[in-house]
Length: 233
Length: 233
DNA sequence: CACTCGTTGATTGTCGACCAAACTATCGAT
DNA sequence: ATCGATAGTTTGGTCGACAATCAACGAGTG
Image 1 (spheres, rainbow over the protein chains, first blue to last red):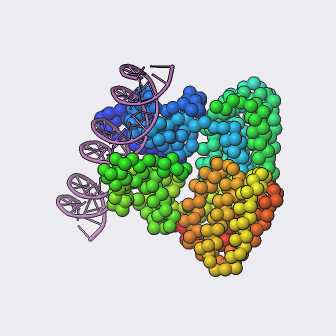
Image 2: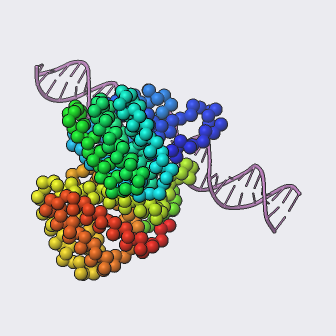
Image 3: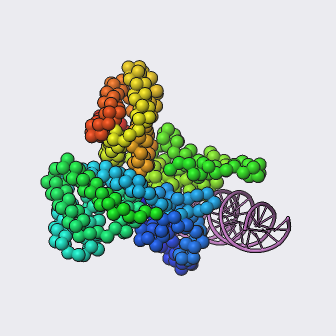
């Protein structure tokens, strides 16, 4: 649930009176980003006072609220009188997340394929072309960005706000695990072969194929991850 | 996201000093229950002071926290300086929720079927037998309870905490819409015919069938709902 | 009479101080 | 060295105050 607080108008009187306080959302984003990038590692305790030191304009109430919300998102855990800490995910959690992704993103692909949204489909095709253009390059950074954009577009194309919301909640934990994985060139090839087929199915309105292929695509991703046997703390 | 705060120990000193204040979780449950039962109707504003009047031991901070969390659950919306109000769901929201349910509960059925959990499967079979026993009765109340138990058990059987969490978030909004719908006897028959087939597929480990049937079952539910053309405000 | 524009009361947003409860580390006695 | 008391730290939670905004109401003007 983004925005809302972002639209809070900055009143002149207030801005003049004191430094604009960080809304809880912003504190939340800051912590979330740190978790995503790995500067907060799993198990690490998130001490309220420390966060306030690093974000001087954040007050304790804000930090507390942010931590509460992150806990309800499942990104941190809160133990009574011990405070918040970055949640540890097990190998089985990863499997579960991927199963959920398969279900949700598969459905999204199917619904997008069945929908009459030529403009969005053109954009998908465009991204696909870009992806094809760099699949043999070594620009992993760029591939990752386009890859994310490709997935995001399909979710948007499904027009399902609930599916979007749920997948958003899976994104960070999964990403945090993914940064440990160096995409091999071979993996990129495989992934993009899958992408191509999915894009084609969506653009041509073959909903059932789109869903099946998307599921296979995600399942492959999980297999690659599992094969790497990354050390999940 | 249950528990956690429920485990808060009631210290003697505190309990003696004054009435135990309601934790945010409890306020949340109270509001949620009211929404579910329809005593808070969509669009209705949830004024902090009013809630404090009705729950004398609840403090403002707790009420506010509860509302914030309910907002992040998507059950209420918060507009700045206008406070919280019960979220209105459109007809299209309903459709989206059912699509998400199809994806998630279908996957849950498949995973349960594929899992080696004889004890849980026996319990499912037992509930199914009970359901069969009353499918021609007029005890809608009891059917509804068993129906919920049946769904819950399949989700538990999938062993997927994320899917469970997501479906939990869909439950209340959907239930709130469902109470408006009096299950017709015919609908009960149809529903239970679906149930029987699904139970059988799960117990016999036919994952693919279980998923397909569960999807059809939920899709039927949506159709029934749509046909009723209930007035969603 | 309709319309604009302050004024006022109600409600929410935010903060900071305060205290209690629980955890944690230190230090002393045996 | 081990155990237990003790002090400091951190979190859980409340309260009161004040600012910002909204909403309703009424006065003045054309």
